[in-house]
Structure formats: structure tokens, C-alpha cells
Image 1: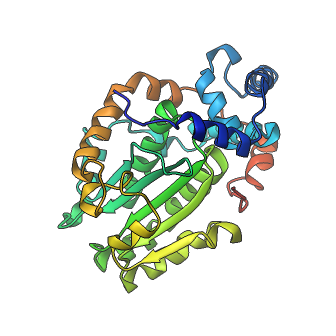
Image 2: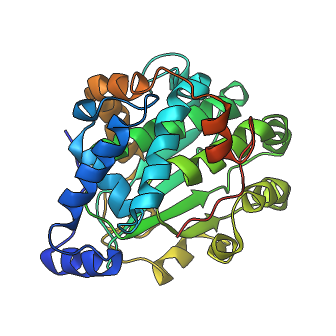
Image 3: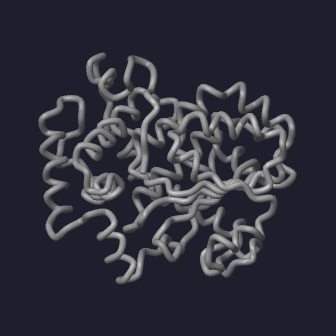
Length: 307
């Protein structure tokens, strides 16, 4: 059962105004995206595309059709070009169930006062060393992102909170070893997902993860780099978020991270049919001309801008 709450009527009006969504524009944009797919042999048939999915791309791109078109193309092409990142579609079965012993990935149910969706990434205390598979963590994050696209409501943008106080020295070497996958996933998130990243909060990060943060920051544009906030403890988050949004162990009123994590694992299994649909959305890899148009050069990404 989906448990992401949507905006109030007042918030919805505010968000639509910010996105530039006028009467009838969403329906017109959906029709245009379907027409675009019909004209492109590498994209799914227009009738197979979920309306909610298309609406997410339009709103995530502030009703800019060209940006939505480009992101939708990349989203589809990524399914065939990077099959390894989308191969496993469950957090309760091997191999991704092990990464859940290392990392909690929790989109919070309630929106902030500004209409933002907050997602927590918490390194678990006392995690087993053999669970720190960075590639598996990337797959799990992309998996939750896909489920969110199924369940998400009208939002003004995204906020990520990374709680890293339990990170050990060994993780830096693992991140460095998987730097290619980490970089690819961050740039995929920018190029292929209709998200508007508004802020990134990093809590309790020891000096040893500075190199990992530098890697993440190097993958995003200057506008986004300025949206990083560093905190020494979770209590400082109360200066940025209402207590009704944050989990109880961080001084908030929402259910605990542990409970929400279990709910999300179950939710992934509940929408298996949808996840299978996404995986099969585009089985044909585009030729070099399409690839170069989207990634800047065959086999590599440009550094891309996001809101």
C-alpha cells in the first residue's frame, strides 16, 4: 500500500504556480510526449506508457517539454544500456537484501511546508562489512527511485539527507573502487529522472568520507554544489525541517526509520509488476547518433544541469 502523502490544496496551487503548470498544459504535454514516442523507433509504443509516468516527467522539468522529452528518452534508453543497474528488483531477496543491512533508504511520507519530498539515506550502525557492496547500494537506490515514480504525488522538489555518522574507514576504499558506478548513477539521476534537487544535507560525516563527498560534488553543477549542508548531529536538522516531517529518533513526529524502512521493502515487492514493466520499457539500445545526442559522447555523460 502506497503511503506517500500529497500536498494540501494550498500547497498544490503553490507548486503548480512554481512549475508554471497552467490549465490544460499537463494533458497537452502528455499528448506531445506520446507523439514523440510514436515517432521514435527506439522508444516504447505510446499506448504502453503510463500517464502518471509522463506527468512526472513534465512536472519534474517544470513543464518544459524539451527537457521532459530528453529525460524520458534517457530514462528509457538506460534500461537497455545499463541493464546491470536494473537487474535486481527486490529488497527482500538476494542480492539486494544484504545491502539493507548497510544502508536504509527512506522517502518520508509527509511533504515539507514548501512541498518538498525528503529522502533519508542512513548508514546503519554495526553494519556487517560484507554488506558494504557499493554497486548493490546504487542498484537499491535506483530501485527505490523507480517505486517512488509509481507512488509519487505532486511535489515541488527533492531533499536528500545522508546520515553518515556510522561510516567506517573501510568504506572510503570501497567507494573509490566503485567510483565509476557511483559517478554513473549520480549522472543518471540527473539525466534520466524527473527530480528537482533542492537541498542535500549530510549529517555526522567523519573526515574519512570527505573524498566520497568530493566525488559526489564533482558530478553536479555549481548550483547544486551550493545546496549542500553539513551538520555535526541530527538535532541540527530541526532548524531546517518541521517536526511533523522528521522521524521520531531525530526529534520528529513521524514513524521511526526502522519501521519506514520495512514498509518500503514491502512496497517494492507490492509493485513488482510495475517494476517489470519499467525494466522491459525499452529493450533496444539506440545507435551511436542517439547515444551521442543524449550522453554527449558514446559511453560517457556530459555534466548536466538540474533545478
